[in-house]
Every structure is written in C-alpha cells, then in structure tokens.
Image 1 (cartoon, rainbow, N blue to C red):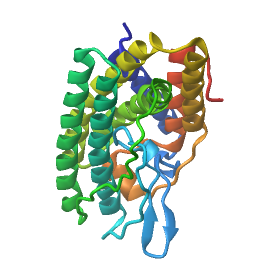
Image 2 (image 1 turned 45 degrees about the vertical axis):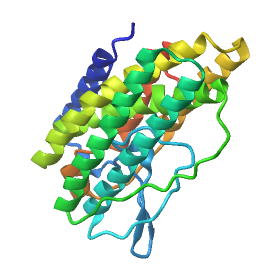
Image 3 (image 1 turned 180 degrees about the vertical axis):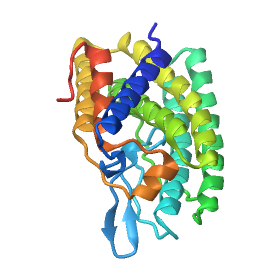
Length: 272
C-alpha cells in the first residue's frame, strides 16, 4: 500500500531545503512566480484552480470572474467555491460508483470526503470574510448521462490520483509558510483531510483497474502522465502580499512538486 503521507512529507522537505539554499545564495523567493495565474480584465480576476488548496473539480464546473475587495479576498472567495464544488464532485462519484457496485468501504469514504469539503468551504468562507471577500456558490452544469467506468477512471487518474495529491503537497506548504495564523491553521487541517482524499483516489483507482480492459487501463495511465506533465510545465504569477498571507509556493517549487511526484509514480521525471 502506498504511503502517501511519507511521499508528501519528503517532497515538502526537499522544497524547503531548496528554498533555504536559494536564500543562502542571496535569492529572493518572493520574486519567483507563485502557483496561480490572475488574468486581468478590468476589475475582474480569473484564477487558475489547479494550483490551489481546492478539492476535486466536478465535470461541468463553470469558470467565472469575480469582483473582490483585493487579490487576497478574491483568492479565498474562489477557494470557497471550489471546496463546495468538490463536495458535489464526491457526491456524484459516490453515486456513480454505487451504480457500478463499488465496495461499501469506498462509498463510505467518498461520503466522508464530501462532508470534509463542506467543512473546508465553511472554514475558507471565514477566511475570505476576514479579508473582505464572501462565499461563492459553484455553478455546475449536470448531464443526465452516466459516465462509463473507463471515463470515471481517466478522470480519477488525473483529477484524483495526480492533481489531488499535488494539491495536498501545496496545502502542506501553505500550512507551514502562511504568514496569517488563521490561514496556516486551516490549511494544516485541510492538508490532513486531503491526504486521506488522495489515498481514496488511489483506492478507487485500484478497484477500477480490476474492471477495465487493458486498453482502458493504458488510457488511465496516460491521463496520469499528462496531468503530471501539465502541472510540471505550468507557470504562475501572483502578488507578493497574497503569496505571503496564503503561504503559496513559487512557480519553480510547484514544478518541482509535479516532477518529484512523477518520479515517485513512474520511477523517472515525467514532467520534463
């Protein structure tokens, strides 16, 4: 069984060591781009959710622009939406896997994850309000068509096994680096929950692999490799104040996270 906590902790430690070495060499960490891209359009800012302490994204989630008091308020307002959306994603996945006869234990863990994300949304709402933001309700376009197991497996491989694991590591870094005590405390709790969610994604993957054809299994692995490569090649910009308050790691650190996790999965750097 994979020990994700040890893997995540080792990657966080390696990033901390790299940061310390840069500081000793006179590098200024805050000058590096951090993991989120604000795309300015007048008074609106759109966020790139892949890099945040957000949960699993449901299919059909509509991307929206927001007006906020400041960048920090908009950032945490966006997180409230994504946490609520994640609760919907776990609910949908639970119902789909129940239809296909998934083990009761997996279904129970999916329900726990759904409730976790509701708690995360409430906690992040408090943080958003502290900085002048507000809770946002996600807009999700639902379809009547039930996904096949192969479709679920590909989505779980990328959104669950890879991206949820990546977000767990980012959240661990935030819990250590956030200058705001409330943010650090909340991120520490969220990171603990997200480690369980990552384990759940891998448990779902293991069960799905017993139900798929060889070509479907190969497609699932390709989805993992693609997700790691996309994360490893992404670059982000953020203002220094938000990076400090939220404890966001740099763009270089996020690329290191993706590549290190790729090595853990496949034995070599798959995000180059």
